[in-house]
Image (cartoon, rainbow, N blue to C red; front, side):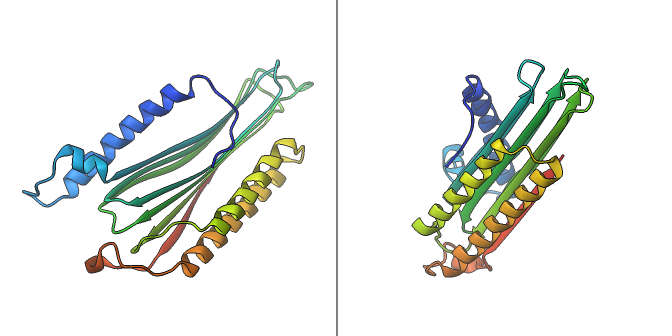
Length: 228
């Protein structure tokens, strides 16, 4: 589930990031594995889940208002290693005090995993830059939600419907001309609703067999927030 503006060079950049992240996770898992453990590289890769998402907005004198949001759900299933990258970047470039720019980028990433992770490589970053842009408004917010359960878990149809509703509300911020601090507060409020929804979904989910009965743990929902 995503909401983003088209970018023609996106595929190549994402493929490169996926490759680097997969390599990092595979290397981390290999380091964490017991000495002498027999596992081919293909088997290791098969149990590594990768998620890379990004929102990118850039305002200039020719396009003074730019907004981009990403709302991604990555259900990775049973994995030994997981690599998750979430990033929001907003830039305002070359506008004047008389004609200021406004650039907003928001990225929401939901990642669910089952089983005991031997290696988790997760980063969540944002960057807002005013480049020779006096009086410009620039805001970037990255919100990452990691759901981990010891048993098989998938989001229900009703949970996905509710997440789709929250995604639409995030998209509505594109039309907002409210002050940046108000936009930030609205994004924070949506993020809090996502956390509540995920926690309720985990609590209400049927408890199937543990993926790894010897390493059971309590289900967790963790939110990471970075704003700039």
